Amino acid sequence: MKKTIVLFVIYTLLSCEKVIDLDLEFDDQRIVIEAKINKKINTEKGFAEVLISETSSYFDNQIKFISDAKVSLTEIDSGKKFNLIFDNNNYYVEIENISMSSEYELNIIHNDNHYQSREKINPSTNIKSITRGKRESLNKDEIEIITTIDDELGYENYYLFEYAKGNLQPVSDEYFDGNTFSFSYFINKNKIKDNSLEIVLEGIDEEYFKYIIQIVVQTNTQNGPFSAAPSSVKGNIYCINNPELKPFGYFKASEFDTYSLKNININ
Image 1 (cartoon, helix red, strand yellow):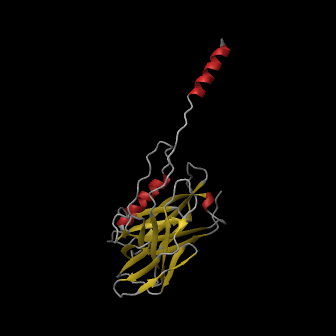
Image 2: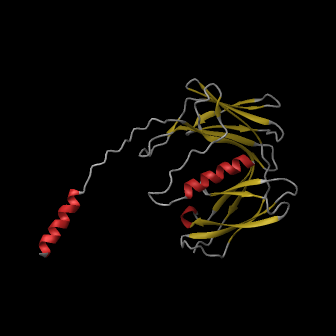
Image 3: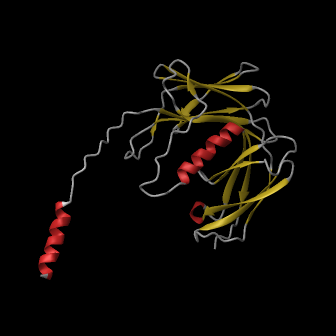
């Protein structure tokens, strides 16, 4: 009797198999633009950098960079135009005198489409200090990094910290306006190379603050296979000759500061 039951169960499981055809065709190809103009704090020098690629299917691991676009940046107040040159998957140009008062207009021409955006440099503050914290994370592979800044009184400031590439922390001064502020960030030990960490602080505006929060939430949310699919995050770049085309990405203009934390004890 036992053998009969086992065979029945096996037969039942096998008979429940069903072939599911997945539609893997990808027909919503769009352009992705990651653009920025950065000015080093306490200097007038900076640079503009633009990465342009195409969206691809879920199973495609290769980034399809676009190398034949015409990319330029114009300083509105003076009319100065800077042409960005493509090299090593990005468009780049150095700028000697960046204006804090002028708007900068980004123009990209690709496949007869004209993409455009305007931004003004958002001021930053200096990184006062960065130290290794002592608090432990629930994740044994993470360590605490404590960052301290002095915020300027009377201004609604927004900041973006990057702890090694891709580890982002947006911060608003809503609750510490005009004060010295320290906060914790827990980073995976694998992101720390040769016991050192390069930290970048950028001044951003409220719109980019909201944009990057959505990006961070969507990239860090892991609720399993039944979680809601990520939604499209609206940027500030538009196709002026074809409004139906909605590119992904953002053009930000920031003053920035950097800090190198050396000899980190990661144990």
